[in-house]
Amino acid sequence: MIVVMKQGATAAEIGAVIARVEELGLTPHPIYGENHTVIAVVGEAAIHDPDNFQAMAGVDTVTRIGHQFKLASRQAKTEDTVISLNGASIGGRKLVVMAGPCSVESRTQMLETAQAVKEAGAKLLRGGAYKPRTSPYAFQGMGLKGLELLAEAREVTGLKVVTEVMTPEAVPLVSQYADILQIGARNMQNYGLLNAVGRTQRPVLLKRGMMSTIQELLMSAEYIMSNGNYKVMLCERGIRTFEPMTRNTFDLNAVPLLKQLSHLPVIADPSHGTGRWDLVAPMAKASIACGADGLIIEVHPHPEVAVSDGAQSLKPEKFAQMMRELKPLAEALGREL
Image (tube, rainbow, N blue to C red; front, side):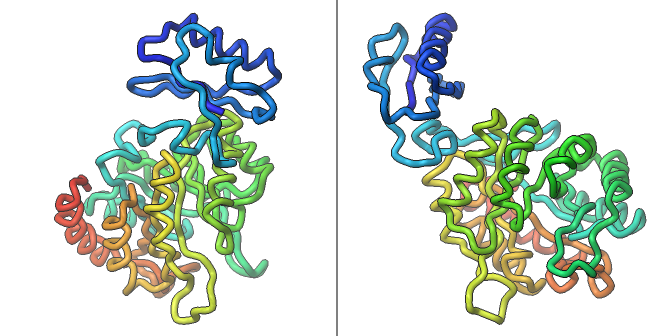
């Protein structure tokens, strides 16, 4: 259930409600909005009477949340969540673009790519230091050296860094280097990992599993948020269907639906969604048109020799062209690139 406090409710009144929630053996999650404070009550709330809270000072309304995803629900927070990084924000009117190679391969590659995507307008640099691969014989990433190269590229360009973390044990190390922790599609339901990133205050980019429902994506976000980290972005990156002409089926239905169901920012990944560089720009435009808050795009200076995902990577000049074409579209939709 959610307890909506009256506008102007005092800190003492809010504290009293939180204390009452804890007395009942439930977990309070206060969410501070522009106009109201909402206290999401998590636990076996269904057995408790809303009257436990309705009569308390400062309480406006008490409502049961209909969805299993309590903290991610629009019922818990009606305003869009905006995640602020120093120099960038995710959510709200401004659209953010994250760009870079699938895998960190070398210092030259990372610095060249970082400079190019920054000049084109990207605000965040993506790159995999650790790579979950279908084959154990495929390139698995540079590990710590890759993290160091990402940090160097950030120092040179000022771009924030988003990179994948694969295990709970690796969260402290990757958090030292990354501004955003990415949970890849294959780990969307790795609950130990979700709990671990939930115990940090690093923003999390949570990718939808390739065979996962929207409900399952939101429940994975709930794992992170229930551990106290509300800085979560949802990423639509395509799902596996019977169609062999593209790598995945890019489920753009999910973007407006997630925006209706949840207050969390939604990022679209047309690179993985299509698996084809020539489809990335058209689907990036479609992503913006249907309400995405940002894009994550694979860019490589020499995709023909990339160690992973070269077929879906844009060359820097194609990325710059796409960014120029996105700008008037964003403005026409009342957004800002």
